Length: 207
Image (cartoon, rainbow, N blue to C red; front, side, top):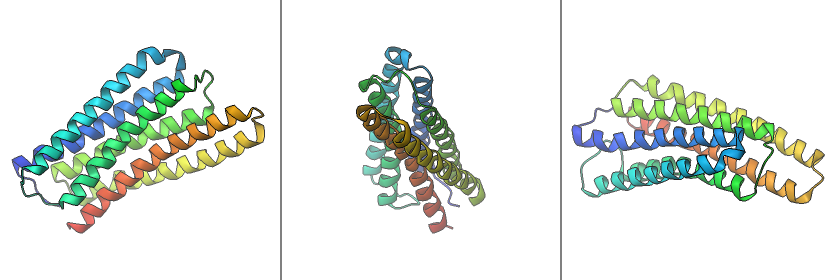
């Protein structure tokens, strides 16, 4: 594992901050999935988290432009920032779609996917924090493995959800709505795996 100098630490702290925003966003999305009637309260909070994530991303890119040497490549830094930011944006997008579609009764599979997303996001914080603090490789890779397991669990829930939807839903509009909502939620879980795999690649490359 590499060790970071103080200026390098500042950039990696932004990675961790954005990952923390992703957990917060996933938690607010979960609350909305549990209580869609609270959208007027929860949506502005989620929007504020999304904006904070964007601000942290811009700060990190500004640091990168100052030309400080970093232990990982600039392309890897830009990609990691983008993927982390996408996690925050994805939760925000899912919440807005729920409100746009005026969903009142939440399907249980959507609740399951939301819970999986929040757990996977929390594991992302662990691996990004371990990357920043210079802990041993296993401290980074253990949460990566857990994210991969959660993504597989999400795939299973998604397959069951789509199967049930096409078997039971008679209303074509509702079918289209829920198929898209399930796909958005699963894409967010997949995004966690993308970040985890990128962190894993960075670690293996810098052994």
